Structure formats: structure tokens, C-alpha cells
Length: 161
Image 1 (cartoon, rainbow, N blue to C red):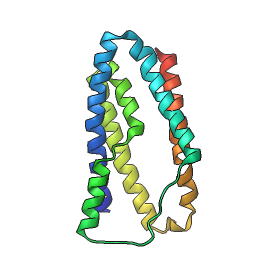
Image 2: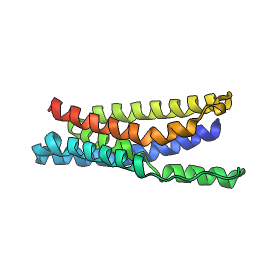
Image 3: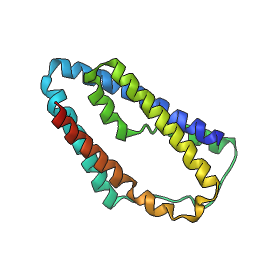
Image 4: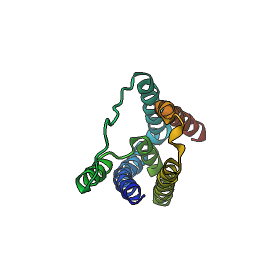
């Protein structure tokens, strides 16, 4: 469970750092270009969501054929999680920059809490015997769920502006 918490924290840290940069860019652009916050930011969410839906149907992933252990594997996992920020949420940071830093901070905190709690809960459930469920099938639909959520969020932003 500690490895999951550390990996999740590394992932959250890089996502929030990159997200803050995007929020600053979104805020700067929205001040200079009103159309950015009204049209471009929601369009980016929709395009990004469309890419995820597309990739869902053409996605090929790998499986680990055997288990490895040790500090080097944990270190590699933490490094990999840090250098793979959650790109799905970055569009939200970009759009959030227009609404102010309190909103960006709220988004970062909400993302961190949901991500870490979600990872810990899923790990606990997996360790408790849910390996019997065909999670592989659910994994194949993760991109589709993410894509549809991004598209819906972009459309919602269009309606709110």
C-alpha cells in the first residue's frame, strides 16, 4: 500500500506542477484573448476527449509477464509515475486559469484527494480478493470513459460561457 501511495503522490505532483503552468498560460491567454476562454479552452477539451475516444478503439497495451521486486523496481515505478502526468486533467487546468488561482488550487486539491484515495481504495479492493473480476475488460473502456468525460466537459464549458 505504501508503494501505491508513493506512486500516486509522484503522479499527482507532476500533474499539479504541469497543471499550474497550464493554468497560468490559460489565465494569461484569457486576459489577452477573450475567445480563448470562450471557445479555445472548451474546444481543446473536446478535441482531447475525441482523441481519447479514438485511441480507445485503436489502443494496444502491454502486460507484464512476470513479477519483479526490489527497490530498483519501486524506484523505476516512482520515476515513471512522476514523468507521466495525468494529461486528461491538464485541459481542466488550462481552462481553470481563467477563473482565478483559488479555482486552480481547488482543482489541484480535488484532483490530489480523488486520485490518491481512488488509488488506495482500488489497491485495497484488489488486495482483498477482487482479482477474480475481469478488470481487464474495464481497463479497455477507461479511454472511452475519459474521452466522453472530456467531450462532455468541453460542451458544458461552451454552455456556461
